[in-house]
Image 1 (tube, one colour):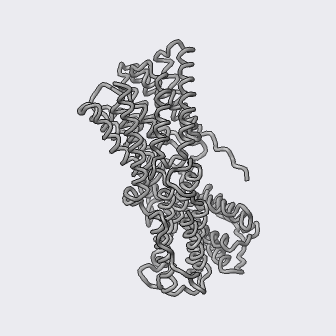
Image 2 (spheres, rainbow, N blue to C red):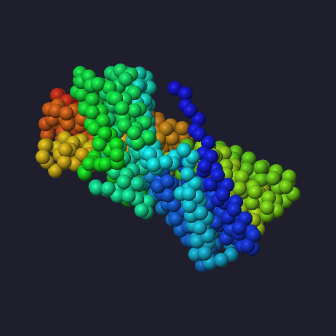
Image 3 (cartoon, rainbow, N blue to C red):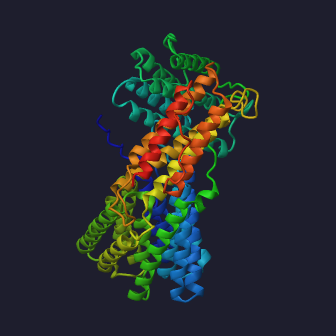
Length: 638
């Protein structure tokens, strides 16, 4: 299947053009270039995080790193003002460890941690006049300006009462992805289509969660919650349909085209606010198809009831469980932290030996390079070096052509560069080139007119150091990164199975706490997506020194995916009247899941899942045990 090119983020590019350049120009025009540089730096880094999504998602994705960046700048400036210059090395090590460990908690935490580490190095190594708190305020003001632009400048075509926010589009995208998955049933692209469907479901869940946490002032309220509650009920219908479609995929039988097109009518109804129209008639010739037909009927009822904005009390909604702080202290968090800390500390020490001032480039470069959740290390090093060379050449060319880059020319160059930042984030090398031009413009404005040539040497040193230090034993073991995420997937699946297979009327009866069960299942699929991404990164890394042959982590994550699917099917079958497995069978499977998770977390597979093929009368649970044995074999073969 061909991949469509990502659309050009025109609105984000307009925000970028109105961000860093005007702020830098205002600072120069008022005779305060230093504060102007810091404000422009804050706007530029905020532009890196200005990604597509709802306005609430933008608030979190831009605001959290901005606050962390201002904190890092404050810490760096305080250290520079009150301690000796070599105090920077232990500070970089400590902040680097915290930054790396925080990255294990999710994408937003990772972006915030990276920005905190980079601004700490800048605060200590880039001399600027003024107290530390004032520098942090200037940086935060620049980021806040871009965030304000994010809230004011909206994407054309997303206005109007029926399309009042990106949350509607996020929910509609779930139904569209569901239709694609149904069309792919029984074909070679079914698994990939299902993954896209699950990803769309997770994005919509995040969008609605932020809608509940960050309601706009003055929003109209209705019985049972905010005005967005009917949308949440429609999303609950989408979740039920997705769950049933996973069972259809597990069954492996295609459905008629008119059935596959049904969710597209629901997607159109979400976007326009109109009725869903006619939906396909039920043909319940299997448990899985019966569950899907019932979910489709319930979705039609939900859409009819919420047509005029009314919502039923206690409507079915989902909420993802919050990230645990224990992730920071997990094996993956410790590995992230130590790897980042060593690299930035070593590069910081080398930079201090080479420069008296303006030594921040080396550790800041290392911070971008070493982050393990940003792709394979070697490819990042190559793209960073190539991007820096291109950026330096472009800057020198502009300096030559424009006769030394006076203030107006510098501001114009920053306007163009900042406008390109949202576009450049799709490729690390292009992003590096654009940011290099911007940073060189900033430091030239701050008084460092000979920065460009030295940046090539320092970037080369940073690349070499990160390749050496970043590949030290015990710092690049994929068993820690991928194994940890697979273990989280299995533990979430274990909790989900224990929840849905508890006896009727018990504390975990799915009819009494369906939202909790859905949240547990969503957490398992979210951890699975992270494990798959980590496995792809590990497969692209250079061979490490941890010994033995490389694990087939792609096969491990594929087995984990089948385990979560089988658990979903088991829960759906029990809900639709299939006899519930016995407590002994449930305990056998959940204990095996726990043992396999422990083995993956330890990295050596010392604990073998429970023997045997699993329950005799429950096919989906037997499949769980089969895949667990497959995971055990794959992770102990080396």
